[in-house]
Amino acid sequence: MQVFRPSRWTENGGGLEGRLPKGAYIPFGMGPRVCLGMRLALAESMVVLTILLKTVKFSVKEGRSLDVRYPGAATFKGGVKVVVEGLRG
Image 1 (cartoon, rainbow, N blue to C red):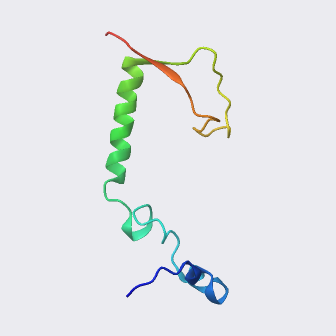
Image 2: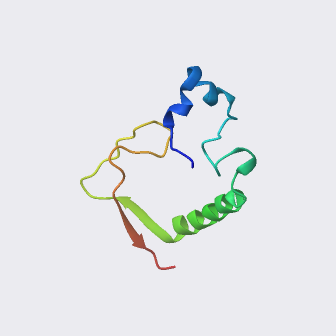
Image 3: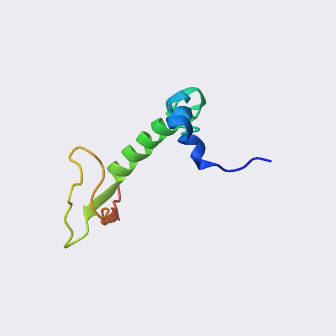
């Protein structure tokens, strides 16, 4: 019978953590088990985003401001409330 023992990560001075390969805790995120469809998903998302930006108008909700959490990153304090308007082409 297997038992859940979170202490195994810190036993013997954290020895197990030091022996694991980088990214071992991210099953499909990196390394030899990276998701096979990742590149396709990224390419598809760029196509969808391009189409959306050409056909839909995004604007910040009235009375809201964008407080950038980290300059250069796509994260904003409290999220971003936007109005989406479809354009007829």
